[in-house]
Image 1 (tube, each protein chain N blue to C red):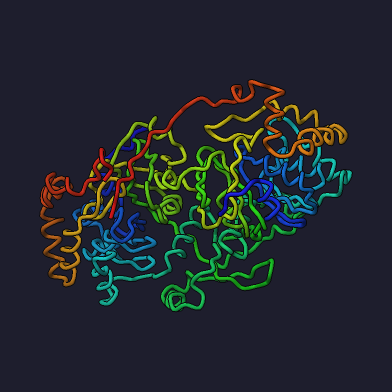
Image 2: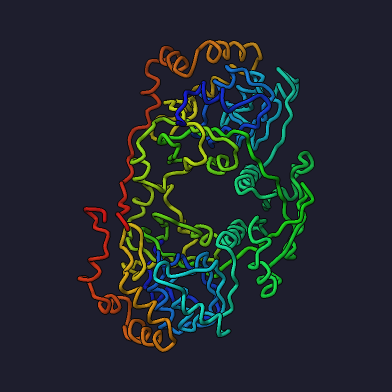
Length: 299
Length: 306
């Protein structure tokens, strides 16, 4: 059964107030076209989670689409901080539940396995735990280990309403491969109630079946498949294209002030009709061609 | 240098009384390692495995083990494991303690061991009698008020032995096909032996990083042993020898025939090459019969970055 949809259709399926898990990590495999479309459609009050805060979350937070972020810290890697997320926290417009990246991955794992809780060795003795206890006391519990009697921190499962995952390869049914690092993505998908797959390449199911162990995301978890090249621009997608250093540098600079970010949004998000308009605006094929991993040479 | 012969690896890492996991679910079951452990006369082992299969039936018949930690006991598709049954029911050749879980219970024990957690929760065992016979299955109330859940303790083998298609000399190990709980069992272990069909250059491993199931940094010994999983199979290298699984049902019914088989096929040869030579002599066309044919996967382009 085909689950192919346009980006606009997939985004429209997400109501304001939903909890969205994002696949990005700093400036890699971020759901950038998705974030721009969410902002254009005016979806608000989202809860966003990811184990390392990334550019997609930052843009959504800056645009006022996010009410709460559940994450393990984050950055724009060598290009700087998540200015919009940080500003939101400092000004009190954004609630941040901060975990370690591993502990968030464990919360997804508990969700994926349908467990009521999961024990973890991390967080104890840290100020992260202290702050979580102040901010979200209902999220922190302890149990006695029946084997040793020791008291252990156990985390609650995290069950997002929808996971949005940028992948390299998928078929129409949503069976998808992620190449290169995958961090928490498998657990995110399996914890979430449903998944939107955004893919660089759309392939026939027989190609997917040729290498079953690469299928990280099974189609039955997927509600929408969006085939959209360069959907992660300006962030990178392993084997497809590199990050756009110039553009990310520009973004990092623009987000230093609310005014600068507003100008950025006006130009790159509100100033274009859709993803294709955006790709033209950032330089079109001539520019994007510099970022592509050449299929012949491999780089 | 991690490359070792099977004899060296077993002598160095497997000791009397150790807790051992030889993992691999249906495929990749390392009989070559089991036979070497039998030949070296190890005793009092605690053997852990999802599906003990013929491999532990043979080791238990040879008197290597004092305890079996497992899920699902049987000769898959054929019948019971007669040697383990004799050990449990009659103490032949010696008494065997058993500790039984569901499959996912074993997975959870390895996961807990791998992540060095105190226990692992799982939504199993409710309404079953298994907790009554296994005190290591406990129940805990969730502090979040969302119900009660079973928990099992970590399993940290002294040695985990994994069979795979290929590894480099550092032990970076790649597998494809039907995987089991190898990654978790390896990370949970204090020491890891990998046994492979081929040792390849590091470049080949690096050309396809997502296939690396076990990283070299947790591997202590790499043993090159083609056909080391017979009568089990290695995807793309040889198929499962179902005839032997049927034969074993007859061989193992009586203690005497079992011991005669061990004398001939395990004690009667110096090493796995001796076993393979006997196998090929008995059936010259065996590898042709078990050849899996070719179904190559499409290479993928990872690109060059940074």
